[in-house]
Amino acid sequence: MDLFSDQRFLRVIHSYERQLAKILALLLAVVIGFATFELLLQSGAKVVQWQTDWFDGSLIKLLDRLLLVFIALEVLQNVMAYLRDQVVQIELVLLTALTAVARKVIVLPPSTDNKAPLMAGFGLIVLGLAAAYWLVRNAGQDRVSSPHLSSKELGAD
Image (cartoon, rainbow, N blue to C red; front, side):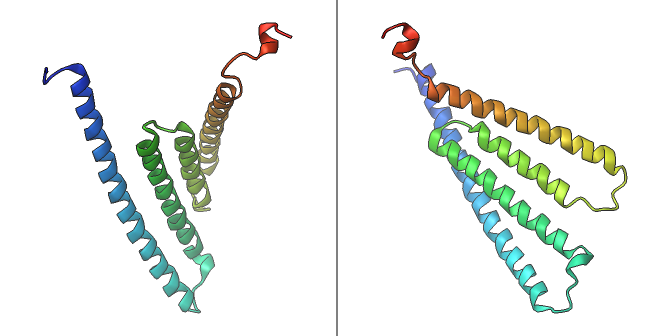
């Protein structure tokens, strides 16, 4: 048995890749847990203080942190889907990217310089991601809905 055969080499690399993905998923889960705990503590402290002015930017900061935790959860879902199916699910990646762009738009300070070009750029990014998502979804539905020709398409009655 050849120690450096192609099949053995690919199995070793595949195993290494899966173990690395598991370690990264575990690390990400721990970080998300701590971030959620910190978010709960900070938000709870703000709620307890009745003098908190949510419109001084505190609400935007809260939304920013909350959306960041959601994005991290989506990334964790991407890693878990990769471990489960052994393929990168492009739909999840595109939805995560859309969420990240939406987060940037939502938390963009009103006083941002060059806001019009920035918003136009975000709009183009969203259109590109949405178009890519639509293409991926339609390509997937075409494959699922017609994997084989039907008897009508073959000319049989």
